[in-house]
Image (cartoon, rainbow, N blue to C red):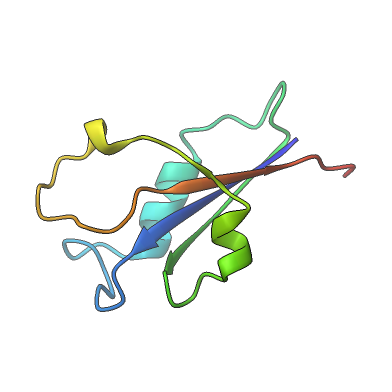
Amino acid sequence: MTLTFWFIRKDRDVDFEGKNWADLLDAWLNLVPENGRFTKIHGQVASLKELTAADYVNSDQLDLDHVSQSSSWEAPPPHAVTRNSTS
């Protein structure tokens, strides 16, 4: 099974606290091991403008608000899309 994470950011945030989004994405994706049930782990950091309505509607919301360290973050929580993969 392929697991895809969408990390939603504000349009104006070109980085997060001086850290590059690509580096943060790599670190986040490395937290999920590619073994057993999940054979492929993918992700993308995007603003709501970059996300299609289909991407958003066809995703499953993850309730991760309780792990957030910043009270100033107002973007929607990340969403994950799971798809069966034959590769």
